[in-house]
Length: 465
Ligand SMILES: *Cc1c(COP(=O)(O)O)cnc(C)c1O
Image (cartoon, rainbow, N blue to C red; front, top):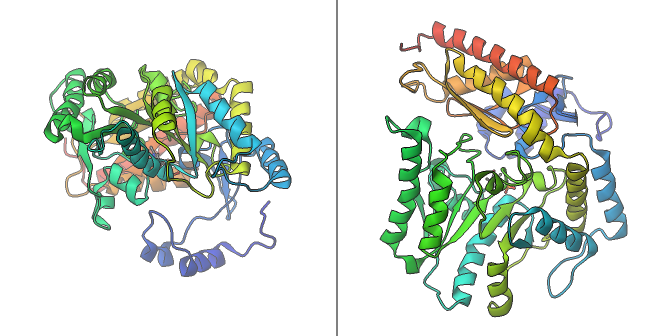
């Protein structure tokens, strides 16, 4: 069923789309020949396209549809709210019941003393909010020079000027002269690609200590915060060595800078706990949330802060001259509340942590034995497969970087599964409600696609061992 009556043909829609629609992260010039894939419906963990193909959504949309598709309760909650009060703002000393209830619910779910939320419309807006908020925090404490923000190479924090600057994607920085001043990047804890012959634990410590060196280079009095994803998502599901986070936490405390966790992907059950910070056993001062907060049913994000930060903002900060028309949009808050109710009533986070993620982990790691796979890594319900021409050397496909990833992605789609490729790495992040049987299906389709990719790689003569 489509909400557009008398849907045009796929070819017609592709033509109209190519003529009038500018897409995010897409080479627009190629659309005239290739055409977009038009999604028309979804249910559970499957999406259907305009040609009637049913695809297992191994990415949960864009890492967000945690409770799966087809949850009419969320649609009804948003519709009820839109009939009651479709819009009001949260500026100038006003509020409304859904924003109040959601802020309270988030305080209940978030780690430690993270009890206050500034609402935004997205993860990118949260990143921009964080830059302004951490600077405002230190200025309110009489330390206006503490304004620098340190983040990491190959991080993803969004696409606005602030978000893309905080992010460490060089291809994004090249478009439009980013990053903005005051933001610097340290190396990522990406052992597979950058660890060389170092043991992972040792490498993790070295990467964390790069933060200490960067703070010392800039001067502690000039640094406001360090921001990082507990596990890098868009960068390629980069699971840091065990030693990494404890050392980062130690350094942030010792050097008196705020620790900001970007939980936009890791939050809301993705790693088998409510937040990635829970999984790594630390309590950030500031946390960015979006995506799984509403399972993508309506746009909403937020910045959560600890009591220590909230107290300074409230008692010393005066008016924070910052806000979005849709900060705490009533329908989005209602959808998020219903999404969180489902997650709690259905015990989704516990089920992931205790049952489905361990099962997926066992089978995902078995893919590591495939001749094309250099590493299969996973944490909770997010994972990656590094493809390589030489397992022992963790080598790249010299001269063909990125091509094997695209080949594999096409095989995946033809086989009925959506996985994303980053470089020559396949990544997955399925809806958290995936069943054990569906996990088997996901593994089978992934293995089949890897076999076909291997055949292509062999016939292209790209294997080097
Ligand atoms: C998607 C993402 C963002 C940006 O969120 P948008 O809602 O797309 O603006 C920020 N941080 C991380 C870790 C993300 O994955």
